Length: 237
Image (cartoon, rainbow, N blue to C red; front, side, top):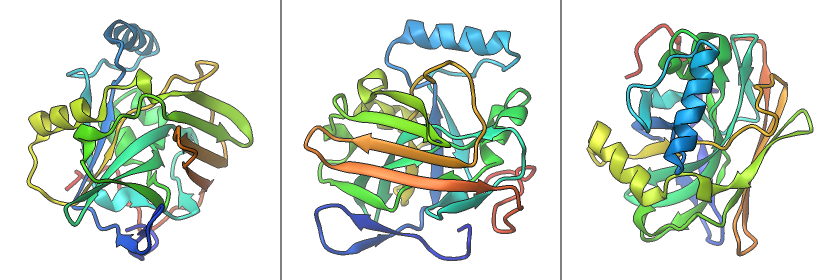
């Protein structure tokens, strides 16, 4: 894990911690529920020089060592940005909902989306909510998601815009299989409020549940290279 320490997750509403030592990290992309809107977004990206995905949705298996709860993460590229995402975690056979940021190298993204995602750590909050029934029973339509960069509102909306957790998980298994290991699955993101990527130092991502519970993570990027972040030129394990 980046920083050399094994992160631990605090379970909201319950005593105890969950060691976070995933054997698999998957970042799902193009997970919008409105397929016409997803197609229009793909066309917009193509016009900007970003190649279309091989499938919709698509799934990027990455090195699980990229997952970090650290408040400061080392970023190698100058043009990077984060995005709020719901995160499904399976640890010791139990499921949890968390919040994370799919921090991505936007320069690399034009050439290779998978490499652009592998180039940056994947920050996640250290608080999670138990999901006794797993993804299949989670209804996140009324969960609000938002992000800020350097104090500026960057994203805001409801997770109803994304595929349901059960559908997302089934498609992940269909695409990559399920060996039953502990894993972290990033579930996709919402449109940017002004439609343009923004680079910045301070990022905050947040999920707000209808019952008043919230999941929040704040992190800062550092231009100093983190020696524990895997080299993006190597293949994810």
